[in-house]
Length: 238
Image 1 (cartoon, rainbow, N blue to C red):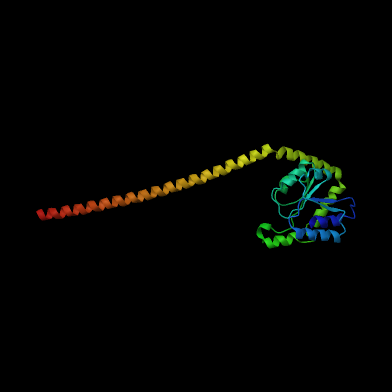
Image 2: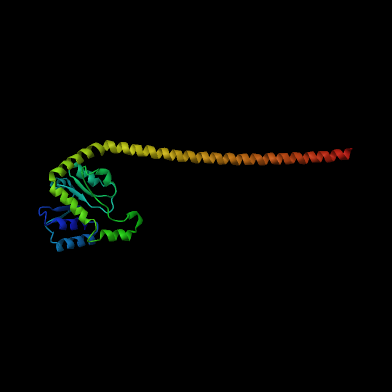
């Protein structure tokens, strides 16, 4: 709904702007509501749905920019794909987006206006996603307008994005990152295991020391008893 509402806000001033959504509908009821809202806003020719596509490459070629107004997002590979195709980005400041866009170098970040999703219920998240008038729509519309008003600037940003993804997010870089992660985790596991072994050894040592102390005490007690018996016998003999 955020993207649809943002398009509504800029539709009159930017009559040539269109939004193309590519991908399957995971929630049919939600999609039906979006389509009905699109009909009410008379944006059927401006907000287009392509559905699932086995090859999305041609659609990147049709686009001037890539917009992903996520409420909740991790590390989305789709953003790297868009960068590889030289598209400037408009992203919500969630997940890894701030790592990709640094000081507006390859796109714009839309502020995350929602509460921390880690602290709210699943039901509340669904409420936010279903909001037909999302509070981040004006900021999203403003970002889209900036792209329209300064196309050359953002085309250059798209070229920088392609350079960034080719230099920072290559297969070799990914393998090195995974290797470093595995080495770190193995080291931590070894340290934890080493600490555990050391604690077990210390516990066994304490137990052995306690046992030897008891043995020594028993022997000393036995010796004292024997000495007492010898003294008693010696008195009787004399």
